[in-house]
View 1 (cartoon, rainbow, N blue to C red):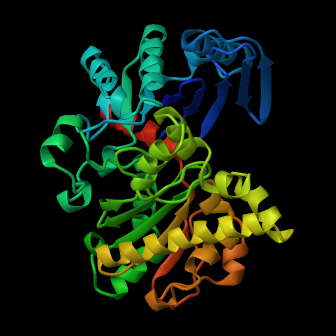
View 2: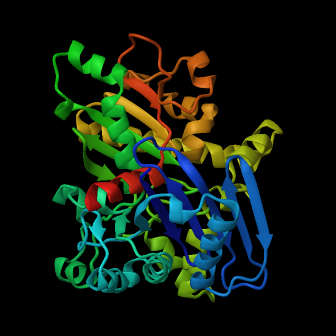
Length: 403
C-alpha cells in the first residue's frame, strides 16, 4: 500500500487525512482544534469510529505529536501504512509558486516571506510544515491554493492601480480554492456526458468552457477554458468576489475609507467586520446555509434578503463569466453548499434561461456522492454537481511529484 498524509495547518487547528492516492480511500482523518487555547479538542476518525479527546494542546508541535500517537493507538499504524510523502496545503504561493514543490529550507523561507499577503493563513501553514518535517522523515510537498490561477491572463490578473505601487506590494489577482477548482474542472472534462457533448459537436477538450462555483462558508467562482483558468472571483485576498458565510465579497472600496473617516473605527475593526461579521452572517445573523434556509422558510425577512443577495451575486458572476468565455458548456456546483443545497442551485439558474441553463427538478433534488448531471437531457449547456476532494487532489499531486 502507498499512502500520503495530508496536513492542513491553520492558525489554531490541524486537519489531517491519511489517503491512498490511487483509489482515493481515506484510511483515517481528523482535526485538532483550539491549539494554544485552554480547552483543546482532538477528533480522530478511523473505520467508522470516532475517538475524541478534550485536552490542552500547547502548540502545533504538540498537536502533530498527538495525531501521531492516535495513529499508533487507534490505527492505522503509520509505520505499516506505506507513507511515501506528506502533502501540505499552503494557502498563498504568490508569484513564487505556480505548481507543487518538494519542501526544503528555501521553500519554507519563501512561504514565510509571503505571510504579508496571507497573514491569517500562511503563518500556520509554515508552522505545520516545520513541525511535520521534524517528526516525519519522508518527502514533504507543498500544494498551493493559488497555483491553478498563477497563469491567469494579464487582463484578468491585473488591477487598475498605479503599476509601480502594485509591483512594489505584490498587488494582483491571485485567486484561491485553486486545488478544488482544478480537481473539479478536471473531473468534469473526464465525465462521459461532457465528452459525449463535445464529440457530438465535433469539438475537442481544449474548447470546453466551464464556470465552476465552489460554494461553502468560503465561496469562489472560476472560468475555465480547456482546463486552464482564465478568470476567478477571489483576488489579492480571499475577501473579494461572492457573498460568503462571514465575508462580504465585492464592495465599493470607498466603503472602507468612509467607515474609517466617519467613525471612531480602526483598520483592524474594519478588517474583522468585512472578513468575520459580514456576508450571510452580517445580513441575517447566521452563516450556515441550512440555518438560513430554515429562517427563510419561517418567514424571516432578513434571511430572505440575505439569500436574495447571495443568489443575485452568483447569477451576476455566471453571466459575466459567460461573457469572458464566449458562452458556457458546463455550469458546475461543488463544495458543501454547492453539493447539498438543491434550492441554491435552482436559485442560481433561475433567470439564466437566456444562456440555455436550467435544472431538472427531480435530478436536482436527488442526492449522490458521485459527479452527476442535474439539467434535463438535450437542453443545451450541462448543469452538474461534482463533489470536490481537496485532500485527494493534494495527495495525488504529492505522489506525482515524489514518484
